Amino acid sequence: MAKIDPIEEIQKDINTCIGFDSKNKQEQLAAVKQNGLSIRFLYNLDKEVQLAAVKQNGFSIQHIRNPDKELQLAAVRQYGGSIGYIQNPDKEIQLAAVKQYGPSIQYIHNPDKEVQMAAIEQSGYDIEVIAMCPNWKEFAEEIYTNRIIKDIIE
Image (tube, rainbow, N blue to C red; front, side):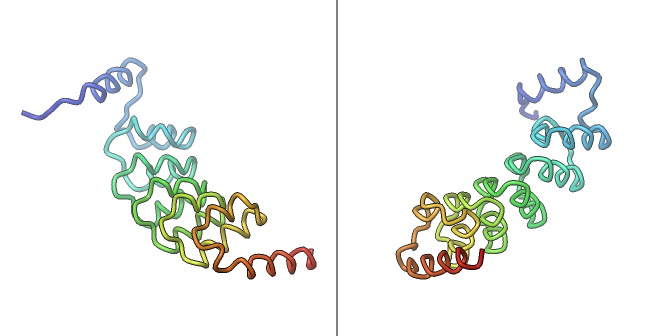
């Protein structure tokens, strides 16, 4: 006998009461386009619905099992901080996240120099973001030089 999840059963009852069919693709798309986090109440999701959800709210990736690279990129491009819900993001995902939101570097384990510099540059050389970078002291001179050059150019 299958184990029944009481929360899921309650949600199904609520959906039935309000006339929402959580398995209907068109209704799913309408729901996630309005609020990506509504994905947590939906069932039998296809890739199109998942992608619409993460494009509306990057944090909705936390409700997707084993998101592929396309979903991961869409999530971090919408909000870099959503990388905190991605297991072992590759360098492309890391760069996209920090280029969207520099402080998201705090969720990346052992970011390389390129990722750290991208986070620092995105944040406008914010000292708090620099402090989040584990190896910033190793390239402090480069940070300083880049900042001076950027100030001169602008």
